Length: 276
Image (cartoon, rainbow, N blue to C red):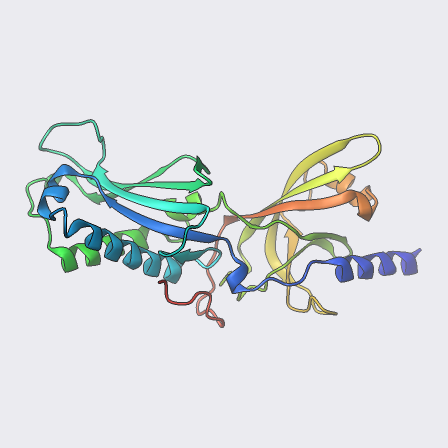
């Protein structure tokens, strides 16, 4: 029986999809919009597109520095768009005393991936402060977004709604999921946690279960050497026994999400080219 179990585990590793690399991460186009009327007046109709484009590039650079499981760009017509709209906290408000911030939305094929996020840019106490010029504005925008894209930041949480992979392999020995990335591909520390959507397709029924796993392991043998092994965390989860007892051919991993991101510092691999 032990020999059979070892053969099954080896077959699962061989069947795992080819390892992905940094360029296979989900790609997101970054957009920036000056929506606040005062800021729109500050920059003319002729200058505003250039300011918005430069701000989007600055944001993509800052996000690339902080988040490794997504690839950021400002070019191309991608299905997934991350938009930063600079406006008052309550866009319907009319008072001169107002808080200003970024309304951040993530859309895929035109549909919202999750609820939007809000990041404060200027508090009410700075309502009377002058609007910075282009270069100072870009610097201030970059600093605020870098702060909000830390491991527990609202932008990182928003991006957790994007799957980093649509394939992985469930293994029984060692128990866990072979994920088609190395830690360095995602600049991901072993403390990170992923969520995996699993389908069990048996003659009796098709069921979908989600499980959480800590990205703390790595495979050592064969073609998937170095690939992340997601170990069930917590070790005991509802329906996990169903997954363990199901024949391998009935199990399919449909999506992998990063739900707790711990960046690796320093990262041994370049996780992204300079945003263009």
